[in-house]
Length: 259
Image 1: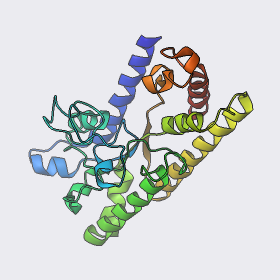
Image 2 (image 1 turned 135 degrees about the vertical axis):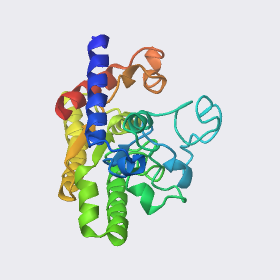
Image 3 (image 1 turned 180 degrees about the vertical axis):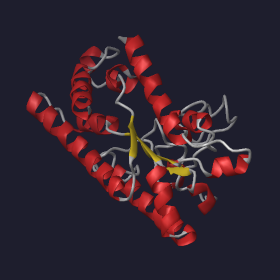
């Protein structure tokens, strides 16, 4: 089962990389990079390269040991090194995709894409509200980027960038956790399915808006086996250290509807 999951993930990432770098190679390296498809990233801590460094939140990873193996300093990534979008960018011959809120961002960097993800974010605005950049707000930031590109490059070039870009999402896990942290009423199947429907519905609405803006290539990372993560294993005080069954049920329900 784990081997099948690993193969699926590798195949999925390979498809994204091919989508970004599927252009004709030329002798001119700088022209080759300019013609690369952009990568726009949305999501939570699995994808956040440091956006939370620039908002008023305690949910940050800007201290050691974060970042110690690759960057040699904490960047805001919830990792000791790089994240999945970083590896995709490298394999697709793109520069590291910067956090959207990074003050040094320039319009030229946006032609390669930008990362809107925020550690702790969800598809629901209520999930950890005031501490994160929710998915709806990430969408608003994408609109701002398009306006900037349109003002500098013109309507036609901005449309070309957005139509060729890949839009990469990882969202939903924090919504599931937040609901369980806040209430114990999600004990029946109908309540769980309703919650998942709302999360999927909000995510779908954002994807539809990106489509209207010209997006055509989308990638989604499924919610992982967080039912056995430390944060989930302490939810049930009677079974601390064990995988959390209610979280397992929510993840399964989410995964089925996401497909």
